[in-house]
Amino acid sequence: MNKTISALILAVVPVALPLSAVAGALEKPAEAALQRALEDEYHAEAFYDAVMAKFGEVRPFVNIIEAERRHASMLADAMKTYDLNVPKNRQIGSAEMKAAVPATLGEACRMGVAAEIANRDLYRKELLPAVTGHADIATVFERLSAASDNNHLPAFQRCVARN
Image (cartoon, rainbow, N blue to C red; front, side, top):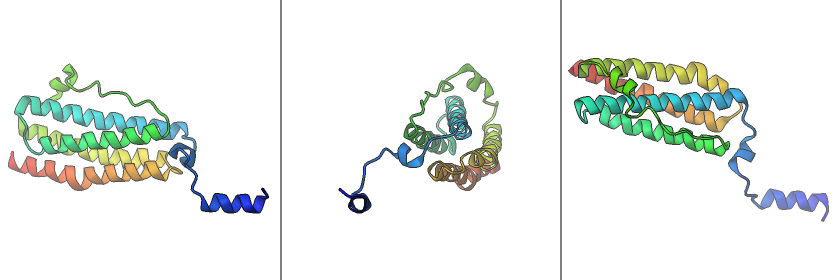
């Protein structure tokens, strides 16, 4: 088969390649950014879980913990795309998380505000710059940063105002 015909066939017939082959190799800074993002989402999930263990299934924690789990799942999917190991969340139920929960729900909400601001800034200032050249990962990071800024932060701010 000549080169012209081969090129035409490749242009017309979709080739099933793993996404990682299409996305390209993952550099160490991008890999570290994915790991750091997952660690941060796991930390939030574990803290919000500990808050609910102390105060019950209260809003906004009961809603936001589900979002944190979805965020971790999105990051895990991105990691699997690049054949990276996805660790389990070992912080859930830990003594460290239980000890981090403050005495009042209002204080927990204030900690939620600070955590969501820190999360948003982590994505914008540290993690997004580390994944230039990986639009798939950048898209996930942008969505997670926006969720912190536009959804979680206002929910915790409302909680502070109520408590």
